[in-house]
Amino acid sequence: MRTDAEAAPIAAEAFTDRFGTAPEGVWAAPGRVNVIGEHTDYNDGFVLPVALPHTTRAAVARRTDGRVALASLQGGGALVELAVDELTPGRPDGWAGYPAGVVEGLRDRLAGGVSVLVDTDVPVGAGLSSSAALTCSVALALSDLVAPELGRTDLVELARRSENDFVGAPTGILDQSASLLCTAGNALFLDTRERRTDQVPLDLAAAGLELLVVDTGTSHTHADGGYGDRRRECEEAAARLGVPALRDIADVAGLAGLDDDVLLRRARHIVTENARVLEVVRILRGSADPRDIGPVLTEGHVSLRDDFQISTVELDACVDAAVGAGAHGARMVGGGFGGSAVVLVDRDRADAVAEAVRTRFAREGFAAPRTFDVVPSAGARRIA
Image (cartoon, rainbow, N blue to C red; front, top):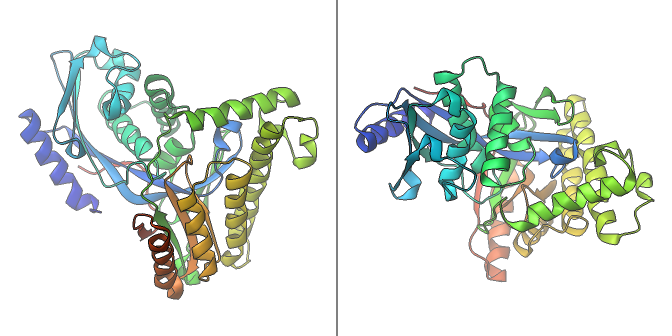
């Protein structure tokens, strides 16, 4: 993981080597990890993410030939190039579709075209929002260059539309909001219906705590069917209950009208997860020991495992091993069907807990996990 000062010249030099001219600037946007609040965003609910120190950098320059050229240092240097007027959902596909969708959203400002080179240290497919880091870095770059009147919330919507409408990934606004709106040292409390945000101080180090990310190495993608299935199930549950979104159900007693077991499970997760977000925010804002959020995190994992049914054997083993080794709480994060977990642990127990997870994975025959400490970091910014 590179600092801004280290990463900016690398991206700029690679851009110059690839395109034969210097970029107009380099912009960075972070991945995110969600402290609590999974799948609540597209149900008009509450979320509490933090930005990672890991970022995607976009070196960008406008063109005059009407073409879009996209390259990635992680993509083997291959160039994806087409005319601006050829941009359409699904073309280009793969990783290039994410920045292309942002360009398409500003097509009227970019008739001359644009060149983009990206570099990243956000783990891909780990449930840490690598796709939002990509779209948000490009969105901020293009805003600065051709649409400076756009505010951060406008860019959240631009990046979301790139993922939803251009790539076909049915995300809510959690990932893009975290990447663009988080601030260093804080978690972002977001009401996704009202688009209201508040910075909640999260200085775990002062309490002798660490929030570990455990990347299980099992990849997932939002464009796969499971995520979309869960979204459709939530929408069907809300329709049967006669409410605009599951956010409008105050507690599980309000789910009595659901006679379909699958829809009941999905809705119960959303209703209880919203309550868990509010409980964690209450603890962090108050005078209680932040260790008290640990059991709430573990409850969230149980709900994701049993009611939302998006966990995996690797994620379950991680949570079980971490809590068994003395962690205060743990849960899977992200869209599910793979990816990462977060573990709340005393700093002096962090190495032992990480080792317990590695030992469990080895015993189960899983690939060795990657672990790192989360430091609540800054959102998207220009770095050169």
